[in-house]
Image (cartoon, helix red, strand yellow):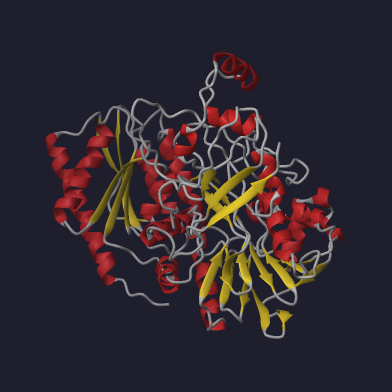
Length: 584
């Protein structure tokens, strides 16, 4: 949950900017708990956080109020105590930082230890307006810096690392199970899947007689992740985890294993299936994974961590790579489900009952399924059946992305049953591109007819250059009827529609049950609508009306015909939704 408004825990500042004295840093957890970290004289903020065991890192807001663009928020009362920047200082700092404008905060944090009373919060808040002041540009000191030596051989380190607030070591899922992953607030693109707010790379730590880490994180966050593991090992009598379980070899999860094995000198045993081992060896040859110790597992195998804690393994091919696997902690009823049940939902809250809106999380889960897993509905359905029959004590689902499900487990399971079964809603999606608005008029006319036919029908009108294909496909997931329109350009469809068609080709699964039609305007040769219709047929979409072509612009008479087509589409959507019988 979000912390309350900026909390005051301030010490007076009486010394000049570049003086040196004992300092104190206050971090406010999402629970409201305040963590104060004393600093040594002459120690900078960055040094203090790197040297402490608090599991906190920093991105610095360079303005006097939160701008909403990073994850660190500063109490404005503390800012008011900082003296103004002298002209000569500003000139010097401008040269040093290669920019003219500097805030007192960014100067203090980068140049001196005078930051006593700084208050940071885990969760992003909306910007506040200040009378007579403009928000200043933020400067940041990212926490988990990419290290070229730890990056996979086929990955490129970002030029500016993502700003990330380190996960607190010790966020418990159960008595001995901890969340130790990372939040990537800067994530915006994921395989051309548009991510608006960021995402997470989840990892879990089980502290029992034997210690196991479940799934690494992305390599850009590996250093902080390893430090969290070391922090949790304290008091256990162990110098390294006994096992690291790799459920999935895709680099957004597995690439952190390179840093992990280097940090613990290759001693932990890697637990994975045969295909995963082969993938790791091909993905990270520079780390010599063939020299690691492995325990190869298959469905039905077990790993005992103590007398009363056993991990069970289930191979889940194509959920969502061939080597994908689930791990189940029978003692606490926790399913570590890798990509399944995930969402790109960034939050300092780790659980579904801590977020402001569960509807938001469920919508993000739908978006994730539509754009990552939709094509794989058949193997996911088979896996879902095996999971529910094999792990009857299931209480918690801990995926690799997003929040952990503990209160709304039944809700996300029900959603997955509906999605893998292609349950249709009473819904029509009209997606189109346009050049001189003729095709747009056609789309609007079809929309008008569909809405007039059935006010209960959810009709979506989506200009594909205004809506990202991520959102279009999300709406299509439960829509039984699709209408795709595009004008002809150079004897074919326009590039944006070609891109959407290509995206759909890779996502629509066999047996999806969708129907629809193509439409478009043209000048002298109607080819785009026929190309779209051919593509729709190849995807298994039932064509319920022949391709509709109109030269230059629709007439009043043709607008009436288009509205009637909209009526027909809405009726088909209503019938599909009412006739559907869920069988699982």
